Image 1 (spheres, rainbow, N blue to C red):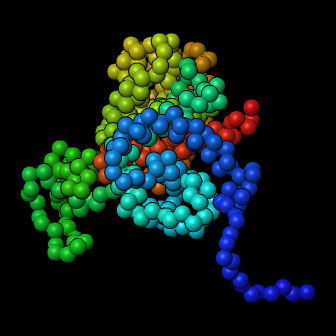
Image 2: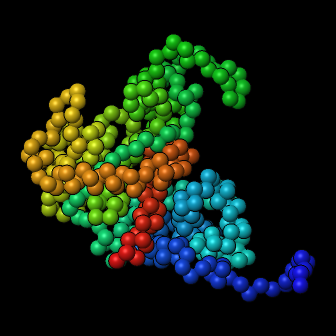
Image 3: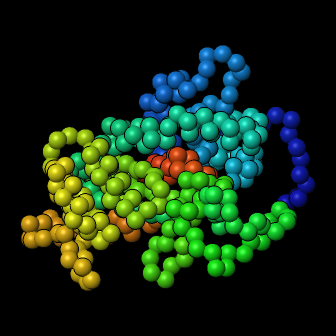
Length: 359
């Protein structure tokens, strides 16, 4: 018998978002880790909120919503709020009931900025790694370091001489500007919309772009991110950031740090050894002499570190995992760094349940 297509409304509904999510959905395991990490951050949340005034968006709900934006590559906060209005999976993960109102997008973004000022992203990454179930997954001796460029949210038209000289743009909202014959460099020019952005060329034959540089330290046991930092895009930023992150590794025991050929510089190798770090850096084989000699390469651990480093780079997949971070809709090194650290924490949260399931 053919069923009826008639639609009838109900006055009351007894369903909850919890009942609509399958028991084996991947987000269930992730939510347990997230809630445990947020409990550890409760004191940090209290420190950045006033005891008076009207209640704002709960920081726990705000961070869960931002995680969904990273997991599902939602392009903007406005689309995220739209998804929260009808997507029951999103409502359940964030902690909203069926009939709870969704926040205005401007209120959401202003509350997110409060978390940025409190550097909650770095605390959230540390809280995830501090979970008793996660600690056994981490290596304390072997690491890899790498960097990536994040395109700045600034137009090349905004990159103008610092002294105010240069031809003015044509009239209009998105006016054209003639750069023909003009020599531009970071010493003489700066972006008016993102002063922290730097003009940087990734390699020979590549275009120069306004960008920031993000750096990550990953452990070798399971390829989890243990530290991040963001700097201006310069030719020495990768090595300088690697030294800072290496010095921050807890403990006084000797560790190894693998890196690609961009880190093969005599000063960097010497500084690493002074810190008690064995630099497992890929050697330059053409054009110039390598700073890595037989003291390092003769050990079997060097070859192992290089293999693990290449595998970790493939697993992390900068272009795919960082997704909407390739051109973040944030300006300034601090804001870009906050989002980069948060995305790194989201990457860990995706991998950890799979690692725990493998035993």
